Image (cartoon, rainbow, N blue to C red; front, top):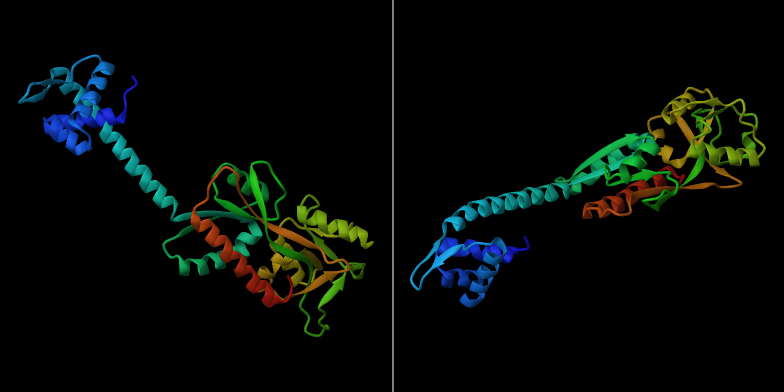
Length: 303
């Protein structure tokens, strides 16, 4: 049936006030305009809703039964709208963020803690996982956004967020001279620790090692960057990683040097679903995180 909410509202007001004049006043229309709405509704439902005289307005038997049904429907609509409104408000106070395991462990927790001193009412849900899992969750709306070394993917908006350089990490040796930088070719003969060849980061590293004539065949391959870093600290070799790893180095006895000739940079990106509008807090947190990273990266002297 093709009737409108305006017609139903007119019907409910007449039933409530038992007066066309008072119902019209409540609806801010003329009594004749109200009569038109009731007549249109009666034409749609196929029966009279009211018995009307010059002094009295009363529901017909059919009108009374129809009223109970309509009132129940209107109550359910009102409750649904209220519940959904509450859900939307709660969603505005929650932000879900994803990142690769390493960044999730060493960068985001302290950033979230500091940000929430500004926005204590905001709940930030952090998901740590591999790049593929994080991308899928953003794509399907399970995460608002994510950060990492992502390639371009359909359905996702990828925005460069921070540019990190590749660095070489060595065990800390108080007797060894400190150096600010190391060339790629100077790595010949070093014991290299590396991530698996399928890693996007390792593919970039291998490309430049090959260009410098540095063999990686004898490298020790480890699946997790944290394990790799622990092995460097234990003196079992050196490692090349993006300078995102500086956050993890703060608790390790390792030193970082810039890799030069060439200096290689990688874009740490922000991704979100192209078709999804993010809450205002997402932009606020993203801007904060950019400044937060710049502070600790700058203090380390290596970006």
